[in-house]
Image 1 (tube, rainbow, N blue to C red):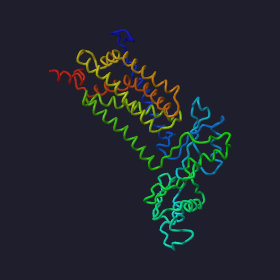
Image 2 (cartoon, one colour):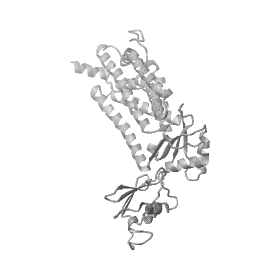
Image 3 (cartoon, helix red, strand yellow):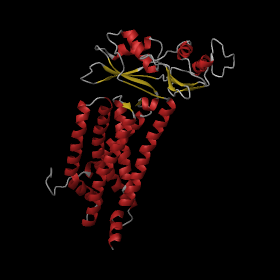
Length: 408
């Protein structure tokens, strides 16, 4: 399918300075925005506790934020409204607190559970049936694994745990604590998590007629895990770009590789800059979208490069700039059709999607636009500039000289 008249050649290179200046400005502004004001990292990268709730009545984000702060149990929360027609009062609430059990509370719990106690067997506070020989805390601090030498007294153990100020058992059943391994006398004790406490705060501050009965979703990530995820995400994008450069240098010519790499970096920066500008969360899904965009941009650029290489052999009398104009004009219909079809697909998710899907689609929409024009106005002009700089004599470009040598 041809959208443009066959044989028509458009002078893209004539306006390359404007587009290159615009691209450099966008990339530079995006790079600055990553340091100030900085990206809005999600729980995946920053660490913290995040709950997603749907209130029973319409409420604004400021009222939710005030309710959390007024409790005095949490730092200033991030409250984000989620657009969802089925839940008109749906919010994401994120706090920096992760565990309900700090080091001081852990030591108090160990002491209350009589860990390492060597007193008399008939001691009322630490009978043998409630004398722990091993206590392990989960990463989030909301679960304890306790081991005993004899059959444990669950009622006594429950009293030991609840005797610590600020420690509460998770509600929802009578089997807490419970024996999870009768043979080894292992007991599991579930404590209230920060998510549970956050739900209690909403019910106390807003009332049961407004606050939801339960959360739609509860997640937490520790600060160390968040840093590891952030480093891994950065490394994955960098490695993808490096291997793309090696692939292009092997398939085409070393002069072609920098153009597509700069185009891919440009597209990734523009997407991240758009996330900072619109104050959207940068999560693992965002990194997945950036990697998708890098691959999409490279694919589009390779199609243009392939046609440039083909036309370099056909039209030996033309300058490299004329070859680029001809090649881009010949692939323009394909580029618009491919980008248009992809754009229609992601626009549906962007318009009607919610939550993570909507943000992923937003990244794809921005990336498709940036990737399409960067193939024409970033990668190709940069390749022409590099070739011109490396050319040595006679007005014949270095790429043409290499092609002639290969055919000789």
